[in-house]
Image 1: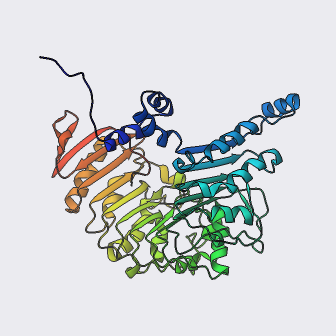
Image 2 (image 1 turned 60 degrees about the horizontal axis):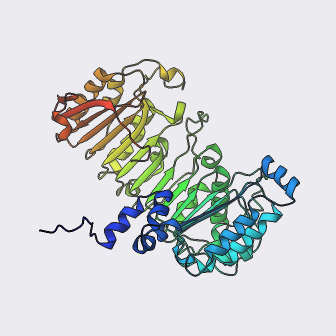
Image 3 (image 1 turned 135 degrees about the vertical axis):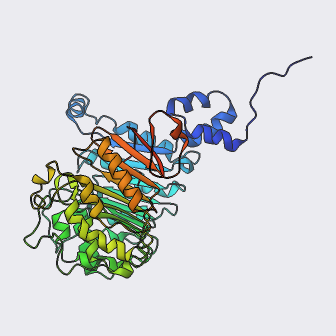
Length: 456
């Protein structure tokens, strides 16, 4: 009986999923196998275009010896190849990075790219690093109808209005150049985009945040569909007088992120927030920022809150257990549907709470935690920063919390050296291991875990 040669017959969708996880070398080798694999591999081989306009000492020596800029001819040839009808529709991500500006020789590369952007009909992610964005270049970008993410890093905006607005779902601005901050001559980055299409705005640096806040305040721009807002949070921004009215321009805002470590100092009033700070969120579901900002929210503004990740204004962004206690009462009263809470906290005592460094002394952590009033329906609790604690105290913390809050289903305690202690109300598969310990109403495990910082 003849046997059929071994072969694998899989749907095209399965092969596409396999090719999605191959690196560039594997894709090149696969493309040489057969015409079918070449057809599958090319969409991933040419999905990303990255151009780095090098400016270094080696490049200077090369130019001095040859009277040519290293990489200039290669960059132009790559762009001509990408602009071909067969390759242009395959590009999904494009990034051009200038190491210095102005760079006249490589400026022709930028102009060529902008002139041919309309050919990249499936481009979704576009990044510019350290360029001068002129009105003409902005108009070229506006010709992209499929754009989802747009990033400007260390870019300069030339004064002038673009003829057309850029349509994008996400806009990221990161600008921290040496130019003197002048509130009267600010770039109008938000005026470049269609406000009705923008869903996410990321202002990475302090300068970018201040510029965008001033633009929103001094113009009639409203972001009606904005869902997620990322703000750089340092003392300048918190003290910015226009911060209180920023959310009025974002009526659909759901996620507010203030991610940078706060300054380790307080004002004489005991808070680093302006006295007139008031937010007007409707339907806010996620809050990621300092715990002392919670007291500025009204009860109806917290009603839809589901997840919070809180940090403080002390060492390494942690919050002392005394200062956070009063702020959590606002969550207990105003956020009945809160399910997950992430705290960067270490134990302290009321006698040492006034000094950030004295707050690192070894004091009972359990007593401070138990005196806190957590939301009644909280299901997941993460305490990040169990300094000077051990697994014995961690077990006591879990026992006390599980007894006091019947709604808790998962507790995560982080100790130094990437050591986690986890507790689950519902026993998992890991409960049969030797590292699992049965505690009240659940199973606890002590081990090292690889937990991404943004898993929350």
